[in-house]
Length: 231
Image: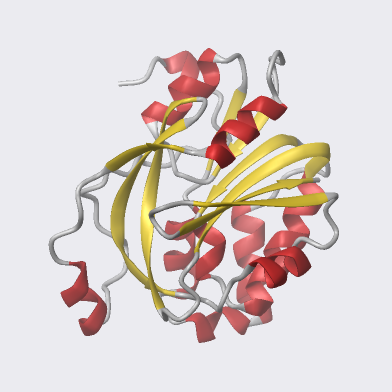
């Protein structure tokens, strides 16, 4: 159990996920079959993560928004560095708001409700955002609205880290849990297949983050494209 003083830093109380946890919605038959027998967690170094923490070195008291859910490992590591942690599970939020059909993500009122639920923060609140792989499951309308909202709640000069599949031909992508081990090491666990919202490559990611100051890419052997973005 986490100490009460650590739990008190959350903006919202959300249950912690574990690699063995189940999504709140049922998977369609084809996805459920492929979900059986998830791969073992992989612990590896991350150049994107290293860059993210390098950008906030020697600083304390920063506000970090972590979209991995209320992970004990992430909370402990970030608070030990002296930062405030705000936890959201954005993939679970997608399940709750839209289910597993990207077509449902085009509804304007549902997009607004989703943003109000997960991004209701004042302008310039955050000094860093750990997005992990959540953006790659969003269709164009929701994706653009989310990135615009992220731009608004991040402070100038702050960084965000996001992961995307580097396989541009797939229509279903494995979603993951991300657990921090240190400033350049992360444990990645399979949380099941989801439909990909669209194709992502370096060119359209640069366009997606066009309002931001810079975008940098790192390609990994797990077919993940790590993206570090400066506000």
